[in-house]
Image (cartoon, rainbow, N blue to C red):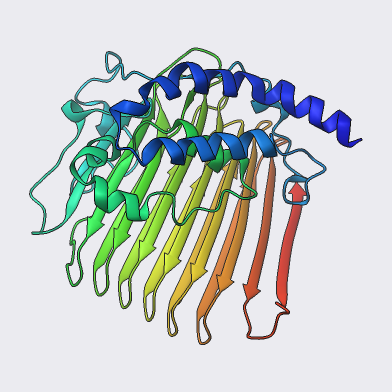
Length: 362
C-alpha cells in the first residue's frame, strides 16, 4: 500500500518538479539570496506530501484529484489586454473608496490599480516590488506564519509564487479607508495556474480593513492557489474579508494563516460563491491574552459545485475568545463542507480539543 501511494505521488508531482527546475531554479540569482532556499524548501515539502487524497482525514470529503490531473501551466507573465480601465469597476466592492491593488492572472497591474495617498508610514505595494525595496523586512516575515508541514498547496505556493500584495501598517496608525486587493483571472487555457501570495502586517494599536477578492472575466478550468499571511499586533483592530467568485469551471484553493496579539480584535469573513471546487484553509494562532477573534463564513453554491471551509483555531494563551459562524445555501447537487477544530494549549502535555465537522450536504 505504501509503495503504491509512493508511485502515485511521484506521477502527480513530477510535472511540478520539472517546472520548478525549468522556470524557478534559473531565476534564483534575480531575487534576494534568501528567497530561493524558501522556494526550494516549499517544492521539497510538496514532493514529499503529494496531493492529499480522500484517505487523508482533513480531506476525506473533498476530492482534489481533478486538480492533480490538470496540466500544470504556471502563468509567469501578465497580460492585461483583456482588462480595460473600467473592468475593476464591474466587480463586487467596486464602489468603495480607498486604495485598490489589481492583479491580473497573479501579476500586479499598475495601470488599473488605484493607489491614493496613504497615512504616513503605511506601505502598500506588490510583493514583487517589496522583495526589492523591503527585502530585509520581508525576510523576517514571509513564510514565517503559514504552516506547510501538512499543507501541500501552501508548499506549492511557496515554491511558485510570483506576486501578490504587501501591506505594512506601523504601530498606532489608523487606515480609515478599506484596502482592496483584486485578483482577476483572464486566462482561458485549461490548467493555467496562479499562486498569489499576500503578506499583511498590522503592528500594535493599528487599525485596518482589507478586502481580498478573487474574480474572473472568463469561464475556464484554471487553478488559483493563494496564500495570505496575516499578522496582527497587540491592541490592533483588523477586519479581513475574503471574497471568492471564480469561474464555475475553475478550482480555488486558499490558505489564510493568522497570528494575533494581546488584546487585539480581529474579524475575518470568507465568502465562497464561485469555482467548481473551492477550499479555504483557515488557521489562526491566538498568541496574546485578552484578544477576541470572530471568524465568519458563507458559501452559496449551485450545480455540481463544492465549497469547503477547513478551520483551525489555536488558543496559545489563556483568556482568549474566539467565535465561529459558518453557514451555507446549497442548490441543485452542490455540496458544502465545514470542518472546525479549536485547540486549547495548556501547560500540561495534553491538549484537549473540540472538533466540529459538517459532512457534505446537498
